[in-house]
Amino acid sequence: MDIKEILNNSIRTVPDFPQKGIMFKDITTLLNDSKAFKSLIEFLKVRYENKNIDFVAGIESRGFIFGSALSYALNVGFVPVRKKGKLPYTTIAEKYALEYGFDEVEIHIDAFRDVKNPKVLLIDDLIATGGTAKAAESLIKKAGAEVVESCFIIELEFLEGAKKLQSPIFSILKD
Image (tube, rainbow, N blue to C red; front, side, top):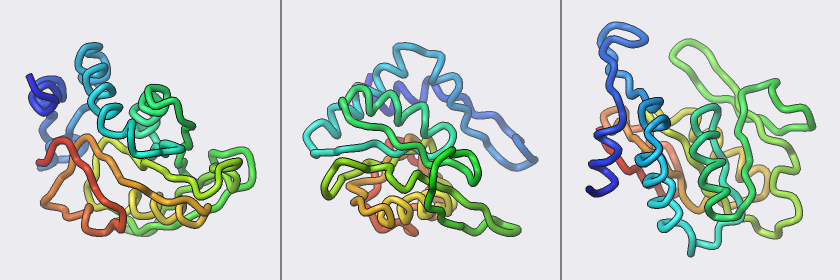
């Protein structure tokens, strides 16, 4: 089986969650399938091992899971992109629009310390409207790093969120 088939067989779709009309992509079934999860991380490791990445930045919260496993596999640092008020040290923040209002994500001001011109892979489980990913991409740039690529396990193409990002995009599954 190729990686797309493995992922499609391991991700559960839950209709009408969290509200009627939404087909929720539940990655918990991927995470508790050890063979599928290992296959995903190995696939991503092969994709990124020769791209001179210094850090993997994962968007809260599911991006933490994929990002930390991948950073371990690549032997590079991991940087969490967190919701406002969750990091204990000095941060830089970026606001992004929601359907009704705004939200904010942060990283530590020294997230990419000790590396000159750091190269970062941004990762999350899913890109929908792209607001959070765009804010994360902006934060990484503000911190003096370059986003080499933004990686998503699933892309909801009809919402066109990938078009908001400036970095190259890689999505394994497109829905």
